[in-house]
Length: 295
Image (cartoon, rainbow, N blue to C red; front, top):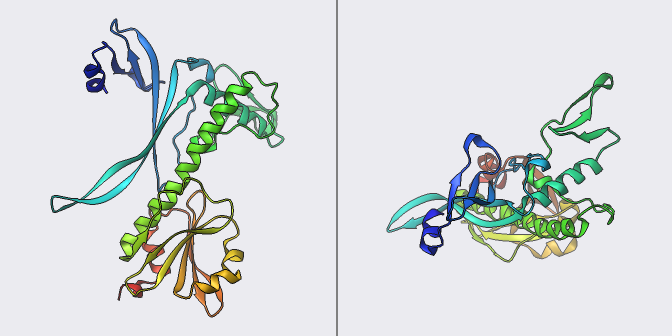
């Protein structure tokens, strides 16, 4: 980053923040005065639970001066000059207003109370525990995939219009994260299977109805389908699937990349295996879709 700023010849520079506190980086002007901060988070496409979070209290985030940068990355295999390599590839990056996201985070947490008493003091969020005592929140507040403005949030909230606009921007990026998770997980499965996937880069959301997301031609000539969306069993048994005569296996992935492999036997689909962690379950997925496909 400093190389880029040096090339612009405006005297700006970037420095890390000591003691691992918010934000990670400070952009400084030619007099070394801080202009704005960058908090950087990296999310792995194939992780079932993107655990990075924005837990910094709102009071410690500078409005209009601190920004959240999210990098979405995954392992990619390719060949360079005859050598096969695997490297961490950044698929997408976006920047958000950290103060507005933190405010959206806090309102979302408070609205989703589940009949429990919640509050936010100067140090941390608290909830009611046993025997009418209070305790610090368990650590789920601020997980990036859970931040969102409640649909029933009243327009009388302070900064409502700004939060609504930032929330729309953020929701679009979360959908891209989900879509890339589908694509990259299917590529990993196909690579282990020896199948050739037909991957579309147009998929930028997780489907709201079950559908075919992608397909791959296996070594035995059969087709492996990637499907996603709600109610996959009901969808698989619909009549239009009867036209997919060369399909014997389907891999379904949920929003958290929980997976199920379905196999067609006679005229019905049965569950051949399922799990919650596709990045560590690739062998189990391969077993469920049938190792004989490689012969």
